[in-house]
Every structure is written in C-alpha cells, then in structure tokens.
Image: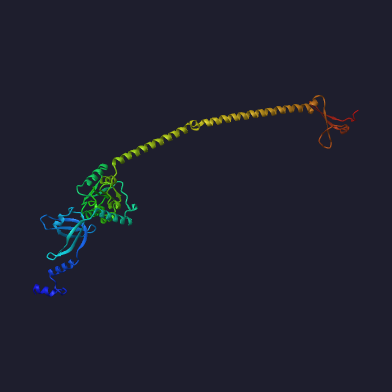
Amino acid sequence: MCPSSVSSSGAGAKPSPDSPWPVREVNQKVKEWIERLGHLWVEGQVTQVNAKPSWRLSYLTLRDPQEEASVQVTCSTSLLANMATPIKDGDRVVVYGKPAFYAGRGSFSLWVSDIRHVGVGELLARIEQLRSQLFAEGLCDPRRKKPLPFLPRRVGLITGRGSAAERDVLAVASARWPAVDFAVINTAVQGANAVPEIVAALQTLSRTEGVDVIIIARGGGSVEDLLPFSQEALARAVVDCPVPVISAIGHEPDHPVLDDVADVRAATPTDAAKKAVPDVQVELDGIAGMRDRAAQALRGWVRREQQSLEALRSRPVLADPCASIEARREEVLRVTEQMRRQVRHTVASASAEVSSLRARVSALGPSATLARGYAVVQAQPKDGQAPFVVTSFEQAPPATQLRIRVADGSLVAVTMASKPAD
C-alpha cells in the first residue's frame, strides 16, 4: 500500500493499527485544531530573547512566574525594535497573539503581534493583593515566626554570585564573630530563573547539617528587579522552611512580600549579618561587665558581712563574754551582803527585844520578888495530886507538907498551925 492510498483511505476514518495516520496528517489536524483558538492575551515573564537586526523574526520564551511552565513566542524583529523600552530577561509582559503549530517540525509557538510591559502600578497592586492573601491565611502572623538562635553553628546564605550583598554579609558577620561558618549558595536574584533557583537553594540549606539560620540577600533595585521576592511560590517556600529565614532584600524603603513571611526582616544585607550573629566584642564586653558587677556585688556582700561581724563582735556580750557574768556576780554578792546585813539587823533587833523582854520579865517575875526576900509556898498533897501554890491559910492545915521556894533554893516544912491574918 502506497502512502497516498493510506492518506486517502485514512483521512476520514478513525486511525487503527491497520489504517494509521501518517505524521503529516496528525500535525495537520493538530494545526487546524490549535488555530481555531483565535487571538488571545497572555501574561508572563521573559526568560530568553533571541533577536538580531538582520533577522526577520525574533524568538522569546515566556515563562509563568508561579509554575514551571513556558511557551515559545515568535514575533517580528521590527516589533521588538520599535518598543519604547527594549525587552530583556526578567521583564513582565502581556502579549497579544495567536497560537500556531508548525506542522513541518511539529512545534508549537505563539505568534505575537503586540507586546506590552506590565506597569509598575499593576505590579504593585498584584503584590498588595498577594500580601493581603497571605495575611488573611495567617502566614504573616508574628506568633508563627521562629526565633533566631543566639549563636548559629552555620549560617546559610542565598544571594547572587559575586554580589555586594554577599560581600557585605560575609564581611560584617566575620568581623562580628570571626569563627562564624557560612554555607553559601549563589542563585539568580532577578529574572525568570530567580524564584526556582532560590526555592531549590532554600530546600537544600534547610536539609544541610548544622545550618541554624538562612539569609536571603539582595541589593537594591527597581520594582521589576525585586519582583521575584514578591512571588507566591517563594513566599510559601519560606513559610514551609523549618529553619528560621532572614529576609534582606534591597534597602529600608523596599518591602517585598518576602519581608512579611520571613521570620525576621532585615533593612539591608549588612543588618541581616548583624541579626544573624552576635558581636563577639560586645559579648566579651558584656561578660566583662557582668563579671565586674558580680565581683563588686561579691565584694560589697563580703564588706557588709564583715561590718555585721564587727558590729556583733563589738557588742558587750561578745567583746567580753565574762563581763555580764561578772556584773551578775557582783550583783549577787551585793544582794547577798544586803541580805546578810538585813538578817544581822533583824537578829540584832530581835535579840535586843528579847533582852528587853527578858529584863522586863525578870523585873516582874517571881525570881526578882524572891530576891527581895519573898518566898513561894507550895503545898504537897498526900493524895498524889500536883503541888499548888498556897494563897490562903485554909489550904495548908496543920501537918501539911510544904515546899518553900526562896531566891537561892527551896525549903521543906510541915504546917504546925494555921490562922487567918490579923
């Protein structure tokens, strides 16, 4: 069967193993189907420009800034030459064209008749829209952000090759902490390849042993230059990174979306180095200051304790422990002497009183009377009763035994007779 017969027989029939379509038939049908799409507007980022003044046609590659997708663009060289701002890699553009399929090579491209740069105002509006979306999802919440380590074992750095940002970060960090260790990955920091390369470097550093913090640094630039750092893919990659990320993009006025989702925002790459590692001299000065304050506090405490001990030692009870005992001893001796004097005085007074009473008793008692010649007569009853003093003659009838007591002794007599007084 000749090719012509196959083509004629299979043109209207469904292909099968017995009657397949030739390549030209397939390409032609694809071409017809694609060309029915008509003209349309497409937005993307220019990643490659192949153009020469001597060429009739120029070729571009248009990339989706959010996904790994691209399309070939074909346009007249005069269209590029007549643009007010020349097209370069990394530009965000909107093109107007018609999908086309070249059947001879089986390739697809977009035939473009108009190319327009995306305005800065529109870019800023899209950035703000993305920023609002990320805030609404809570990805910019400060409570979600991870704290930076005080002294990282290794610092990951993502920046452009040979850039001023890289030199600033390394120089400042080394000056602050000479022993700092860096793991540097150089990537594109603008243009179509910036986002995928930075995301890949971020994933690599997050898996690298010892990397405790990652710095994404780039110097200043226009809104278009800094556009990769406001892309959603990079923002979400930073949110998902398990290692704290410092955003150091541009200068203080620059504010890409990366600054909002990063764990720490640095005003400049130099500021990022200062935030990532401590200043060894400041820390040493701080340690020295704390040691001085601790020593002063210790000396002050010792001095106060010494003063307290001196005060305690100066108290009488410690200066002369026996003084209080001696004072009490003297007091006891004094009280004892007072007691003795009081007892002697009491005894003397009592003795004097006893002597006085004795003298009075002696003066008034029977002994004194007996001494003056008087006698005491006692009768001795015969019936065994106790003797008694005779005060009446009737108590001593004749033959009564009498005991007569005189001053120096006693006499025994018997009553011869008894009679009353005259």
